[in-house]
Each structure stands twice: as structure tokens, then as C-alpha cells.
Figure 1 (tube, rainbow, N blue to C red):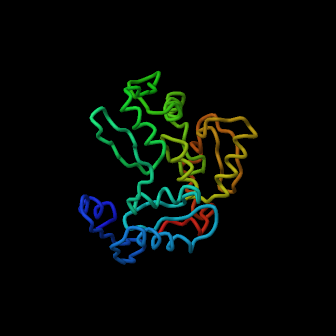
Figure 2 (cartoon, rainbow, N blue to C red):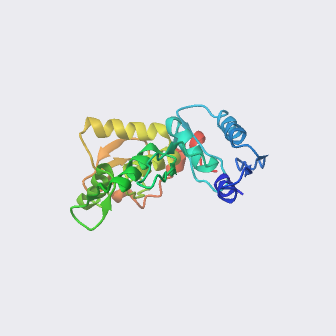
Figure 3 (cartoon, rainbow, N blue to C red):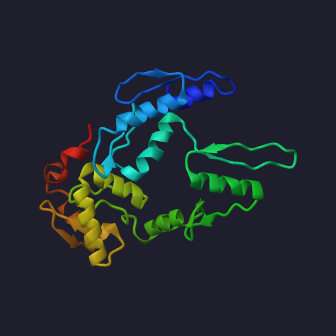
Amino acid sequence: MNAEQGLMENQGSDSYSAECEWNGCGSVFSNQNDFVEHVKDHTKDQKGPRRNCFWSGCDGKSISFKNLSRHIRTHTGVKLYVCKYVDQNGVSCNKEFTRPQNLKIHKLEHTGKIITYKCAHCDKAFKNNRDKLEHENLYKDPNYYRCPVVNCLKNYGHLRTLGEHVHAAHGENVWNKIQTFRNENNVENYGLIRMDEHGNLSLNSGGAGISNANQGVSVRKHFLYINYQKI
């Protein structure tokens, strides 16, 4: 039983039970604070700007240190942000959220002022303008968020997921080199950037790595840092 299941089963009662599923730990807790502190202790063994989550069934690899606590809360079930809205009958909402952005959007449901950002090219709508703009970039080029590493060519729908992929599959230094090259050459489209097997970067008007897709270059051999190797 994970923490969220435990919270649901014990909702409305004084009982609490949660099992730590970090790397097969299996410790069981009857107090949520003790459980949360225990899980935090597991994360302290890792160093550096990016960390891995070893929760059972989680594919959280190469998470930035500043986002780690928020990610861990998805496993512990802790929701720090509570809606304080009270309706005309004196009924409190008390809905809980793990992220402040989600609470902010939720509050708009009470006021009837929900704002959506509609794509200029299709019927999709988004809750924030940044997600809308990232989505619209795919209409400029479906390879806008393609991995620039030769012989990889994985496509993503958002910059965040592309960055997580490069960190996890090729190493943090590769992502930093790509960002530096992109800024120096004023290139927004990642599909136009190509990194060869030697780590050299160039502009490719045909898309990232297309002309080298069948060369059989071992991306893992050249780019994969042991710290970010998928287990």
C-alpha cells in the first residue's frame, strides 16, 4: 500500500498507515510526520544538482534538487496547499494540492473566472500561457523538441520533458552544452541542433541527426554518464 492509498482508506478516521516503497525498504508507519521524515532520509544519500527517485514503480530519474521535495510529496501523499474558500452556506472547500499553481487554478473555479489559453491552430486549450506556447511550437516544426544527440532522435511535446530525457539518457554536461550552443547561435528550435558522436554541435536545417540516423553510433558509449544511467 502506498501513502496515497493509505490516506484514502483512513480518511475520516484517526488511523494512519503508510509503507515506504523506496528501493524495497518496506518500513511501515502509523504517523505521517514520521513517515515523511523517513522518506526524506533516503534522499540525503545523493549529492549533486540532480537526484534519482527510487520509489517502487517510479521512473523519476534525474530530478533537479529544487524539484525533488515536490516530487517526493507525490509518493508521501503530503499536500501543503489548502483551499480556504467558504461558500454562502458556510461550507469550507478544504481541497488540498501538492503544488501552489494547482491551488491557484482551483480557486478560479469558485469565482467563475477560469482562464484558458486556446491554441491558435487546433481546439486544444491550456490552463497557462507557457504550455500553450510550447504546444504551438510543434506547429512550427513537429521536431521542435527533438533530442539533438545523433542517433537518438526522440521527440517530446515540451521543453521540460526533453530536458529530463537528455539529463537522464546522455548526461547533464550534454544538456549544458546544447543550451550554451543554442543561446550563442540564437536558435529556438532544438530540431535544428545536431550533436555528433564526438560531442561537436552544429546547425542542421534538415532536423537533428537525420543524415546520420543509420550510422550505428553508440550514443550511450559517448554521452552516458554513470550518475545518470538508467537501472
